[in-house]
Image (cartoon, rainbow, N blue to C red; front, side):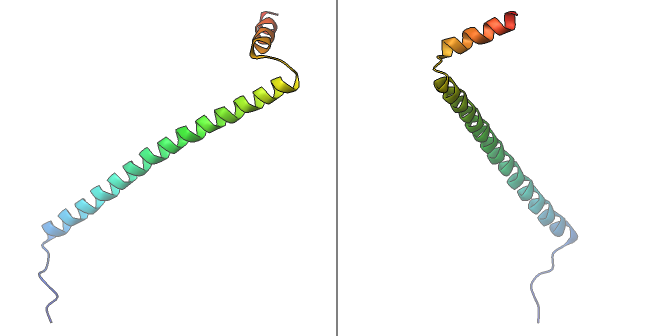
Length: 77
């Protein structure tokens, strides 16, 4: 019982090339998505760090300007 038309070596290679190209495109798309996710996570980390600093300032009843002055004066010494 025939299973269909046999592919020539050229057709097989063309099909293989197409599959490889599709896989490469999927990886590129995944890299873009992962890059975006990386940036989002980095932004969230920065936000959490700012929240921690803000909490410390509140605990010590300091303003941003107080912190700035403290940092500038400690750098000058």
